[in-house]
Length: 106
Image 1 (cartoon, rainbow, N blue to C red):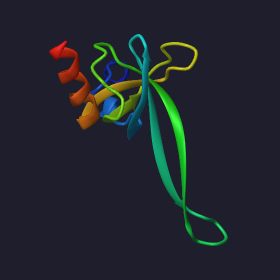
Image 2: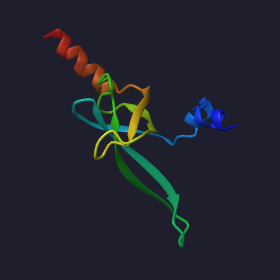
Image 3: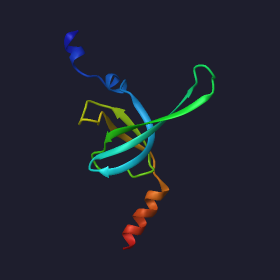
Image 4: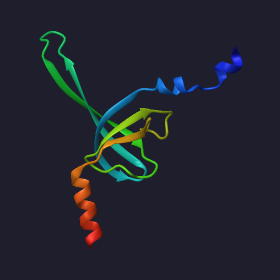
């Protein structure tokens, strides 16, 4: 039993926390800042309240651009602030595609 517990199964990796949010900044190398918007009912007034939080995520290939919708997954600490890693890019930003076309034209 102990030998099977020591090996990390795919189910154990799937239990890691995941969040979906917008990329706000890509100014650092291999790091993106993702803003996740949370909607929660107010405890007393029962009105839906929006709140947002920024997470620093590791982006190995520097593939994400500002405005992209991405999925990030919790991981071991990579640096002082980074505890998340880029899992996938859900939707590309149309603004980023325009900037790439302009850069290619020059």
